[in-house]
Image 1 (cartoon, one colour):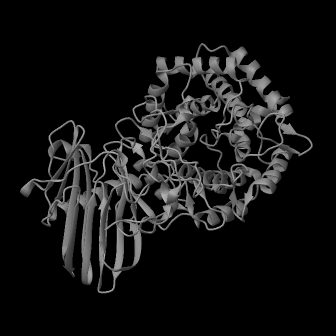
Image 2 (cartoon, rainbow, N blue to C red):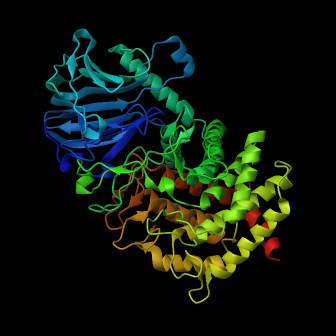
Image 3 (cartoon, rainbow, N blue to C red):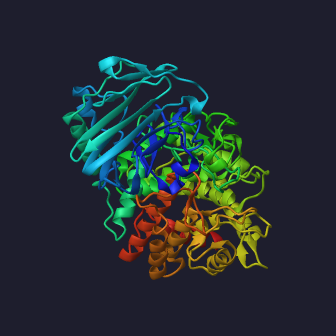
Length: 622
């Protein structure tokens, strides 16, 4: 069967499966249309979502599907799709198996595996099976070899793929196609494995697959059960946490921004970026989310990855890194792919790696402070690195940069970047005051922190507009101004922040519940994390608790039925736009939910620093 964009469906029609090393997108009709193996940032073996004709796919679906519904097995990343046909129904179970390290030590376990199991649950169904791998995003050819009882084999570079099934499969050269008649109670099982540095472990099918599925469900549920959140939005918070865990590269602790590349921020537009990398900007919010939910081990791993990655370039910080902490790939366009719904170009690598974004220093240092204040410890190398970051900020905070939104139009004096330079020095001073960081030039850090504060209050405040603005001395707005309160620079209930919030509502509102990150021409979607920033701003004291709940509940309507969000939301249709699923959005959801819960409890826990920081700010201003 040849695919079309209609077969691929909308971005929000997809679910994601993964094993904390890579991930795959699967749409509601059983088409696995994006997979990079063995890592998130490896070349894709399936990429039909970016070009249905050339990208490659793996499809399991009834010949005459009428309706489809999906769900994750509760508190897991095991995906189940129910598809009804004219003559019966099937349930398709998709997963990348996971297991404890103890189990892996005693039982042969494939390095990388996808299990797909289809069961006829009623009537009789004709199931179509199409398997067309296309290595290197479709640029390279491959041949599927029949290896008899060992299944089908494909060699790609240094790696070997094996497709194994309880159904006799026949190679057709570059793929496999089969039509199978299933009766109620009958099952088909498929295992796709990949091996590169070790001998291939071919799986056992039959009851062993059911055990593998049950083992994976139990592993995810045990992890989800550790979430220390019992507020009213537990299902959405846990789903967001599970998504962050799935997007974690477990060998290093890195968390990728998204498992996809080049899904467009505007259909037909060219804002299509590769997000299969790790942004330092996510550090502060990520560590707060992980610690707030009780996932100290994951916070430790992320912190260790972050300090390892930054150690290579200290005192300068890159904007994004690979999962191993190396430089991201150079950006290039794959012009042979048409892009999602003709939204080209398809890009791999990301040129933002060469930008100057001074805000990353504040995010890294604020994340380190949260980590330390919750029991983490700094070794000598980490302490030295933090001090050197502070010295770099002292020397460069006044430099123009590209800023949080990574425009490719030049550098300016961004308010958000100044805010995070202030944050970097403020947190280092706090760490020193607590005896957690020694031998820093305290007076120099204080002088520069206070100078930055005065500059923001004088030059980022537009008295005519009665609002903080995006660029010093400018007249434009962006949603990152809400973070002036999150980082404790301004109290959320201060006159200036209330006036700024009204200006943001007037200029960036996208429908009843959404916010644009800024006004773009042509317009893009509402930026999902900015919408959760608004809910958190209200919860921090910028509005009533009732309004924070109301906004949060409305934002939940924009997740797909699996609880997943992309980077942006189409204000007119509610459709997902941009790469999917997006870690930053799910981090924002968790942060907003935690702040709402803390406000409800009247809590002022250490994980919630804005009020504490604001008190310090008032002293500095005085």
